[in-house]
Length: 157
Image (cartoon, rainbow, N blue to C red; front, side, top):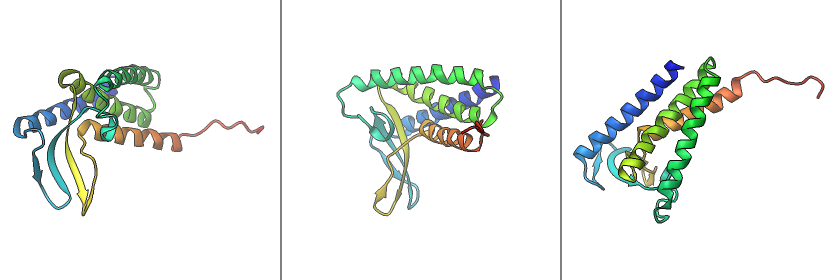
């Protein structure tokens, strides 16, 4: 299980360090065009993914913190129970690291720092961060694991 927790810890460290760098250089709302499809920004997200419930009045901080705490507990249990299932555990470890990184922001700042901003012509993807990226990649790996894992099929059906 230690290997999976190391992956999670690396995600947390990279996430918090990258957010620290952005907070040190950018003021809230600052925007730096890097190329024709990517900008660095500093936005604060008080909601969940893609600013879901960001303007809900404040209760969402406690709600999303609680959901994250429950998810962290369940993921640690699953990592321990299924430690030999490599793809499954890599996916869980990435989700765990991302959840911890964003939970840390929520508890210490009251919002999550987002700074990666991709766009194409007039289409702009919502800003996100390293933790969000790890969660998305982790979930994709969990889906992949579900599709390639041999299923126990009852031949009497």
